[in-house]
Length: 259
Image (tube, rainbow, N blue to C red; front, side, top):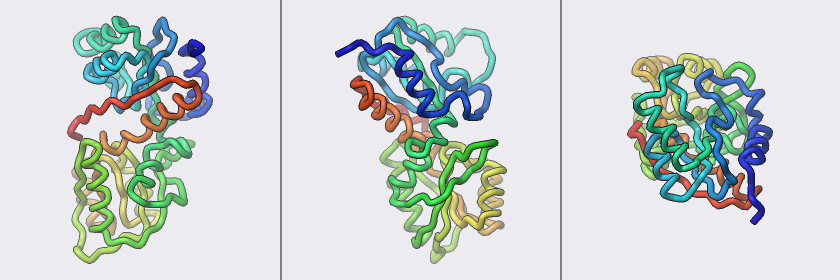
């Protein structure tokens, strides 16, 4: 097999995901976060860059780690403690790190929300969860009881290291207009958008306590499916895509956080 350089894969991903054009929170630092000597011999995919996932990547003989949440969510800080341990492991095992947060969420076919919709048998027909110039989620219509929809989501969550719960709803309630925003999607902007658009059921990863209180009073049900569980699909699809394009084997590193 022809050796594959990190920059070749990174350039491809940056173009595919529109990495440099997509807005995001500053700590996301999308793209290559850590280089290696290379070439790329195996890819590992994980939701988070943690000591646990780096060790798992090394054990799998992977030297490129693709993640949704990279190293720098804590902002600018000294290279001590956990940060030092993570970087030391990456350097010692010559593992490169590529992170994609909102560029992955916003992708038309590889995005977490779109893939979650498909996984629970929903068909997206419109975007949702606008952030600046992009949409991080999807929406559509269905004809299900809310209890049946919650059951589908719960089955998915349990298969991906989590569980699901919902804000209060009547036993005979129906869901007809749904929206999905993975991760921490029950924020003020997303809840307001759901209400304004007549969404009756919002599926997300997690949210603050007030979101469940507000939802009940605004005719909205929020299904909280777990931050980790709702973001397991995008990195796997991304790694599979790279594997098909470059002929490099890959595997997924499950590391549930309990959230």
